[in-house]
Structures are given as structure tokens and as C-alpha cells.
Length: 98
Image (cartoon, one colour):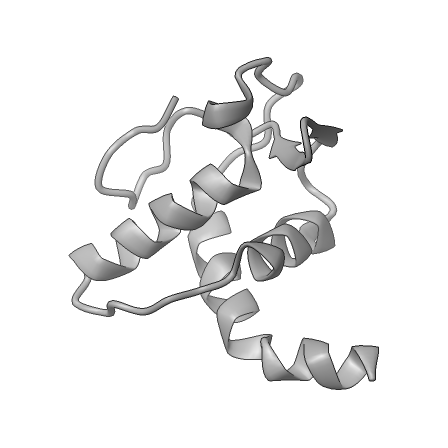
């Protein structure tokens, strides 16, 4: 059942992987849960897709699976969120994030 669920979200994970290609890892994870949470980044990716004329809904869980699956980023569980250590700049992203 778990593999079938992952396959069902493969397109979402691939969209996140595309966004993550432009993001560098940092040495630390910001303390601000709102700025560093997977849920925050999920919305940033949806905004990025909309700016490219590709509006869609993508799940928070798919973002977490994609980011952890790359093996490139530090992460921690804080206040019921998975938080990540990402660079504040992304070369192809419409705006920097905190």
C-alpha cells in the first residue's frame, strides 16, 4: 500500500525536485519554524509554479519526501513540522525566501 501511495504522488515529487535543483543546502536550519517548514516551502513552490503558468495543488508530504529523498538538506522536526536548511537564494525562483 505504501509504494502505491508514493507512485500516486510521483508527479508532485517531480515538481518539487525541479524546484529543489536550484536550492543550495545550508549548514544550519533556521530557528523560525514558519520560515523553514516544509509547509512554508510547499506554498513557495506553488507560487513558483503559478509564476510559470503551471498552477496546481501539491501536498506538503510530497515536498517532505522530495527534500529528504535528495539527501542534500539538513532537516529537523519542530512543532509538528519538518524544517529544512535551505539557502535564502534560488537562481530561478521569483523571490528570495526567509
